[in-house]
Length: 162
Image (tube, rainbow, N blue to C red; front, side, top):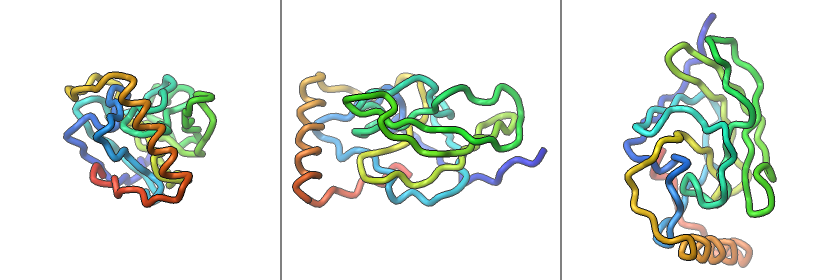
C-alpha cells in the first residue's frame, strides 16, 4: 500500500481543536483559500478530524467542518469521505467531499477549499489551553460577523494558522 504524500501542517496551538472557541477578539479561521490536496496535521491536541458534530464557534470558526462517520481503523487505500459543516440550524448544513487514508501512524486527508470565509476544517479533539470568554460574548461576535458578511464588509485575513 502506498500512502499519499501529504502537505504536513504543524500547528503549535489548538486553534483548530473542537475546544477552541471563537471569541469576540478573534478573526476566525477560514479555509476558503485552502489549496486542494493531501494534508497531514500535527498538533499537540490531536491529529485527526473529530468524528462528532461540532457547533458554531468551535474550532475557531463560524462553520466548523467535522468528519462524518468513522476513520479507517487500519492502514488503507484512499477512500471517499464527507466532512460536515455545522451552523446554527443543523450539524451538517454544509458538506465537502473529501478523501481519507490511514497511513499507519497518521491519517492523511484530501481536502478542498470551502465555499467562503469563516468555514474551516476542525483538527484535534483534545482540550487546548486557550482561555475562553463567556458564551454570550462568543455568540454576539458571531452575529456581528454574520452581519458584516451580509453587508459586504471586508473580512480580515485569518490564514495565519496554516
